[in-house]
Amino acid sequence: MAINKSKVAVGFIVAGGLAVFFGVVLSFVGPLIIDDQIVKNTVIDPNNEMTYTMWKDIPVPFFMSVYFFNVLNPKEILKGEKPMLEQRGPYVYRKHCQKDNITFHPNNTVSYREYRQYYFEPDMSIGNESDIITIPNMLVLGAAVMLEDLPYPVRLMISTTFKTFKEGPFLTKTVEELMWGYDSKLVEFLNKYLPGMLPSTGKFGLFAEFNNSNTGLFTIFTGQDDIKNVHRVDSWNGMTELNYWRTPQCNMINGTAGQMWPPFMTKETTLPFYSPDACRSMELVYQRPGHMKGIPYYRYVAPPTLFANGADYEPNKGFCPCRQSGLLNVSSCRHNSPMFISHPHFFNADPVLLDFVQGLAPTEEEHGLFIDIHPDTGVPLNVSIRLQLNLYMKTVPGITETGKISEVVMPILWFAESGYIDGPILNTFHTNLVILPAVMEYMQYGFIALGLLTIVISILVLWRQKRSKLTAAASDRNQSISTDEKTPLLQEKD
Image 1: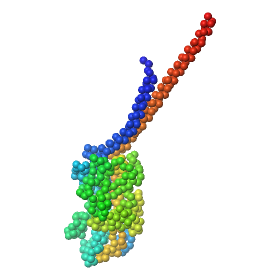
Image 2 (image 1 turned 135 degrees about the horizontal axis):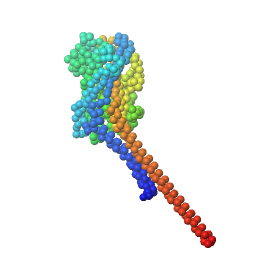
Image 3 (image 1 turned 90 degrees about the horizontal axis):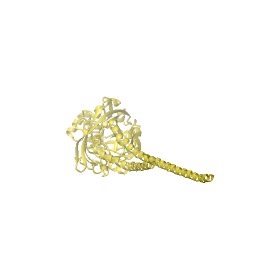
Image 4 (image 1 turned 90 degrees about the vertical axis):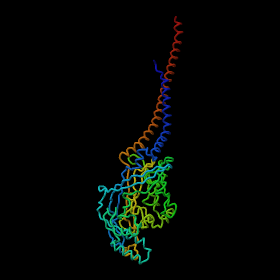
């Protein structure tokens, strides 16, 4: 049985048309399917095994790297000379976070407390927890500034108290003691007779209240009703706004809890989040795009206005009383102690701060904070939050421990909390969010290209088929004419 090539070609044209149609439809439907899957997997829902586990237990390794500023000339500082500092570290701690008391509510929110523990990593550190460091004694120099407005006789009594408990203006302790606490007779005295004056009721240490603690009761939106709200903070410790600062704007609790953000971000999107440790909401801005092991990200950084003072940036007036730009006064949420937060080495701060001390050299690469985030899902791929703790100190008449100290914002330490997605989670992330969308994109173009190629080839086949038929018909006509011309000649010969 002869194959009708024309019908076969027409069939292929129809098939090619369907392939083109399917490819075009896929180009519209494919992104919608991917977006729908992102929404389903981004909602905080125990049924979403991978993303819920990421949110609940944070399997990504997080580390806190601490750098101390060792004071080289404490005696000279008491005579009014400029502090000379030597950076020591990093002393690296693995940070383990786990959410507990997770409670879902009918209004599409979920409450939880996140507990954190720190474990020293000697192999990742430069130095050991037994290293000896000298820093200003915040119990003495901080209290001196806090109490400077008291009558002079009272200040003399305070100075006598310091001497009684053998508390000097500078501390020389091990890293472990400075981090997690040391026994102090003065601390015991204050906790007994002035309860609530200090943040800790046990040993006094810079991070004593961090270890084995939680960040407060967060209530955030699950995104079940609106994916744009997922991870956004509804309240913290039952409060929808803070009471630390002087303006409603500065007291707002904005953004997420700082671990994930809503999906479908653009370059115009900002990263707002609330930090209990900084006692305020902060907002990062887009800087540039990039790739991490094949996964695209947007890098977000702190704008220069983040810690600007109220004179340089009016919205920050509520965080005052302010000093130079680049310093955040956290005394109102730190028991009124004269503490300031800044970027490490006073990066992005008023240059005059660098003139008050020796030993600082700020660079964006080493001291700027950033978050690299996958824009389609709002999941951070690489994080480095860097902050510096500073003490404002000066001479206070009557408190002889302050000597002739020049007025200075003194760096105590800076730390970087960092982590990045790696291992099986990264592989799953790469497969679901890079490979599969790419395969779908290639499929749509493949169908369109294959369909167009099939149509073109089929049309060529039809054209050649038609042309061969026309050629054959013309040949038959010519042959018929030739035969008709020869017939009369044969008749004449007869």
